[in-house]
Image (spheres, rainbow, N blue to C red):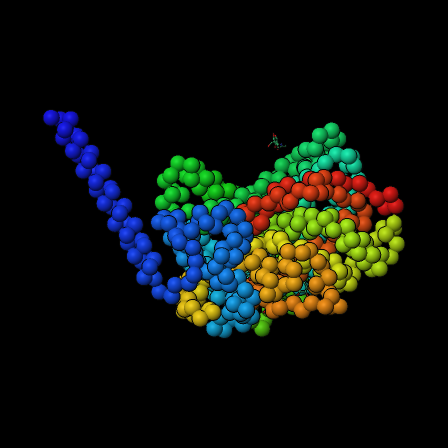
Length: 534
Ligand code: HEM
Ligand SMILES: *[C@@H]1O[C@H](CO)[C@@H](O)[C@H](O)[C@H]1NC(C)=O
Ligand SMILES: *[C@@H]1O[C@H](CO)[C@@H](O)[C@H](O)[C@H]1NC(C)=O
Ligand SMILES: *[C@@H]1O[C@H](CO)[C@@H](O)[C@H](O)[C@H]1NC(C)=O
Ligand SMILES: *[C@@H]1O[C@H](CO)[C@@H](O)[C@H](O)[C@H]1NC(C)=O
């Protein structure tokens, strides 16, 4: 008897469960079929939406769906509806450069994870509060786009390239090395040093970790501190994705996620305290120096002196009249780390890969360096002024990032109800610009799959369609670091290619990469040989 009752209850629960699931599915598809303004797109599944069709690599997935559905499609990222724009002309509103009445002035719809990190009402990338965004964006603008900063950054990057040369000249030409690893520490050193004015020790540490290395003499204390700082920055950046993607319930209560959540919070706390310490120490140092003593134009110093008596071009024309607080400075430094490190690193890997696939391009680059810098067997001086002359180098960078954009797709959100391509877009809808899809669109590019830097040259016989090359995005939220990044990539190319013979370890292999918010180069085996005459 007892057994029968048990069985009955069990059956009952099973039935209820089945009923709930059926009702959920019916409701899900009912609202899908009856949705307003349907746009072509793949058929979704309950809970996951179209995640299975998109796959783990957002860029590859977006290209695949574009082939199937054309210039504009919609998909569901779990429960969230997202629209993809795959054609230059459709991105007009996203790339509108005026702030007034800008339909895509914000990046994301409300998101509890970002809110918990205070990233939706402060900072830049994810800031939804336009007044606060404008404040921070202007300050970052004034800092990393200013000629005095850019000029100083050329010095920093050259110094770090001097270090790189020392490390690379001791590498055995028959030993395969991983460029992906080298570029990680190389760009960490460049971005952290230029942002803070304090040398970071990523490359030293990496070189020390190589087999047979003669440990270079550096205080363990300094090394540990520096590495912990960089590690913490990387953790901070990867945790943003974690907060962004998982609802609070999962983060706070599901075991594995809970551990990650705790790690993220501990890291945030440590990083904030460390930045606070760095900023305050520097503030005191600057205040104690006499007024006529020039300060170094690293980003941190420029942020500290902003609107103080040391600031010769105070931002008086706008609403910022006070010096920045440590919190504000810390927020901006985090934007620089978050926006600058992975992007530049991956761009460098992709560029070196393409150059080595096309030896005639490499030869043409060397010709440009001989033309701009003269005898390459002498020590060459890569000045700030010389960078503008590197037109072919820029074309190579543009073409490499066209084919492998470090940010393959990125979203904005509708600030108010609007319209694109005849479809109504409701306020807070996520709209992706499919950068990689636009970069491969046959209506914008002749033989889009082909690597041909000449298409960017004035006498190359090609016209670049407006908004068809979007490596740095466009409109009011265009990448503020683009001039800095372009300068860094040019310097790195000149310095690497004039001094070293670089060859792919496996010339036939496709590049190994995965999507991690940016398109990440997982491994790039190369051989490095110092040039005979260098
Ligand atoms: C090759 C290197 C880089 C690439 C490919 C890149 C790419 C991009 C892209 C595609 C966007 C989105 C723009 C849009 O929404 O239209 C962006 C935004 C941004 N980037 Fe970069 N970036 C690079 C380097 C840097 C550097 C060095 C910094 C350091 C200052 C930086 C800081 C930012 C910030 C703060 C934003 C957000 C802007 C906003 O929402 O207002 N990026 N970047
Ligand atoms: C940032 O600087 C660029 C170029 O100097 C300018 O066109 C843009 O309007 C600035 N953006 C903000 C928000 O100040
Ligand atoms: C880098 O490591 C190599 C061994 O792997 C060593 O011979 C060389 O001296 C190191 N270079 C520097 C500059 O520390
Ligand atoms: C540096 O870090 C390593 C490992 O994280 C640790 O073993 C070592 O004691 C630290 N050294 C100093 C001087 O802090
Ligand atoms: C490279 O691309 C940028 C952004 O699309 C563009 O402004 C620049 O003129 C291009 N440079 C060359 C040499 O094609």
